[in-house]
Length: 179
Image (cartoon, rainbow, N blue to C red; front, side):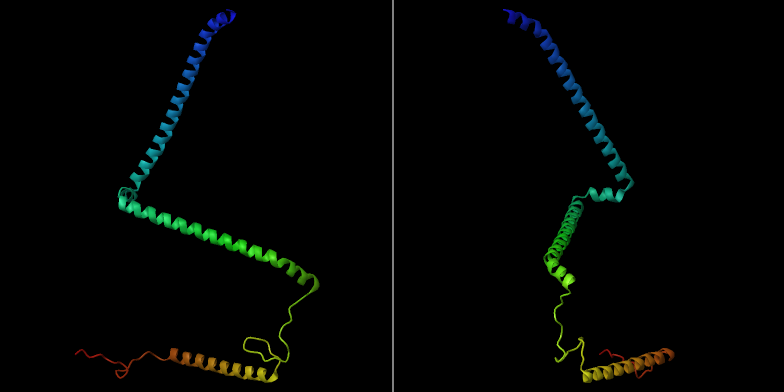
């Protein structure tokens, strides 16, 4: 009985609260719709004005085949860019791991001055390597002098050709006869 009387007294309060809650949700819904419509119309009017100012792009967007090809091209270029960035990052990570794996060896070389032994003194040396053999050194020097003389001769020939006027004699021209 006491609970029934309390429930009877709370029913108007309950109905009042539910109506207030319903009004609040309607207001927030209407505010949300208003904001969404305002933002959408703002973006739409800006886009429309931009397309009016750029009729060629408007024409491109309104042709489905051209728009499709542009989309495919954009997609391919974007994927290519992402693949290139991925490869660059992977390469950088590979180099970093190689450096990390080599660092103990590099540290030992730095601390103790360890070096791999180079070429032995009694071996024959091929091109592009250091030699201690006097005969090979003499051969190399002679060859270098010959190359220098050839270079000087070519420079002199070029200077003479630049000084001469350009003339073509009929004997030098070969005419193709049509049959």
